Length: 279
Length: 328
Image (cartoon, rainbow over all chains, first blue to last red; front, side):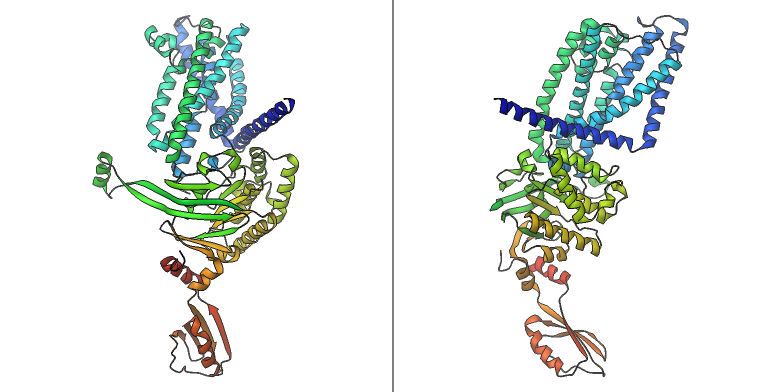
């Protein structure tokens, strides 16, 4: 019993080290390009600058918009754009699609590694790199613009938001992995990706807070996972909508399970269509 | 011990077909037409542990498709495959731990990082203990003489250097089988020779089974005791490499030079003069008639005489055109 447990933990450690090394190698690849690092910092700075200018103009002659003060609105914006930037999963679908089309997807098929795990670890590596840059730039701007940052004080809401964020990132990685796999069948998935990107930008509330939209529309959105990916955690982190936490966790977890089953079926059905052309 | 076995292996590709021009594109949008291409047909194969097997055939013959099926990258349309007891397209990790594949035109290395970084990744992917990793790395780094290249960005390496690194990455976990798809493509003569030397050593010292495809017959002749010729998806020869080349080496090239201007007498023996000056003659002759012709030429008191084998390209062309007659 003890021996089999030891064997189990040894295998688990090996698997963990495998994916940790993938995460590390993608952090290293990001560090290789200095220009990209500088541009990313500038990009984040500019986004927050424009948001400050926009919302300050809107709040010039009023104190509140849909229950938001200027500080809660900017806090929401910084958190939600921060979460959006953390979601780098569109790289996953792009990379898979391109590699299937040019035949280099084979390189993942011959390695003793779970391909989905590889891509998720790849995304994690890139996210961790940008996360560190984004934290630094966001903190600089909060101080530079004297934003009185509104942040949740309730530990349950905070922990719940963190779990939602992780589940949300995992769901987005799953979704993009699934869309990438569709290349095996449809060869070109540009249209799918465009639809997904537009839907996600709107539904996640990264364009405008969902409270500004009609109630009926928001109610429908709550059945789908996107509402819980960026919008709900952002709201939880500024101390709002705690009552939706349980529902959010449940819906998002269910979607993750459903999508994983869909990925499994898609991979097993479409894998045989891969012809590795290009090698 | 037999480690690769296929029976009746067939792979058909379906490809989109359209006529050229705008009308062809519009017609293709409305009504798709597909055609089936048989890349590999009913192929039976058996490879034993430790063999060094060469696969040759013209472009589009089906060699790479066969390698893709043996490594599980693509699924066969029909037939059976068994590699080390596994069906490769199940993509079982246990099988993937035991083979490696190197595609000359595709890379496993991270171009913006150093080779050391990629090797470290492979160490974890293949679950190698630190000590085993260090021993294996040291062995290959010394064998390939690339110590000073381990800490430079891969993208700055020459093609020959990169290929050595690809081989190290592939061999690091000491696979039982290594599939090499044109590993010397684009390499100069020196680099190709070095790679051949390394492969021969790995096959002999480590007992690694190697399956090699190459358009460079020097690779095949030097390394592979056994050759498989594939054309139009079919195996047309499977046997001893020397015997294959011997069989298709039809002519000998005799070059003879003289101190004085000399004319050749009328020659029989199906000999053909391909170059002629008063002091030098180059003659092609069927190899079975070469001894007779040599005797005649010696009677002319030449200052020098040399006998060469036919150009390898011509032999290969003949193998592809007629190969398999009497062998398949």
